[in-house]
Length: 250
Image 1: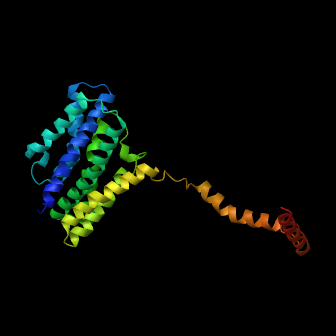
Image 2: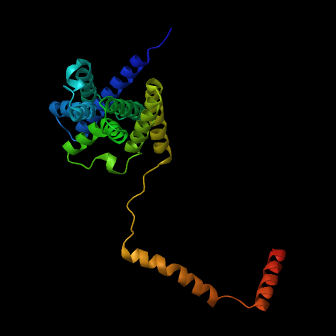
């Protein structure tokens, strides 16, 4: 029995919608919102990235508005989060894993749509990243907090960027299905490894004029210190003999 790759990608796509719908509902529960808050945050979280992508492309109505499966799935996520607390560790791990799969799927979808619209490689990759992280970013802004992709998370936007670049390369080589599958797997591996090992992007550097002056003085100060404490040849022999003797006595 041959498996249709398009059907698999559609399943992963809707899995991402319901997962992010649930995650939006989790935020609403944490903030003690009513049912309206659950619904709005679930829709924004699950569908915001794709709607933003389609709006930027200006090629008709967003798919989330023309395909009823998307809106229905996002609402299902809101209902699940509204009825269940979902505080168990295994539940949170399951949601995180499903979210890592959706990031790669959405990044690849945004990239391939950008390429189909005639955009260059850089705008296409940007569109892929926007598709993957746009919903969560809009959700965080809606509740008045700094979006998680701006720092402190486990390489969420980075995995989307790498997945988008991988999709672009394989699509250019005529292997879009392999590119889509590879983007999903690559995003999941990077995100899971980042969470497991605590990988983070570095924070801001401190390369102000004073820092450059300290770096310029550092070699000279080391050289001066070395000359000041440089022993004579006789004392070097004595020190060497002493250290060898100490090693022997130990």
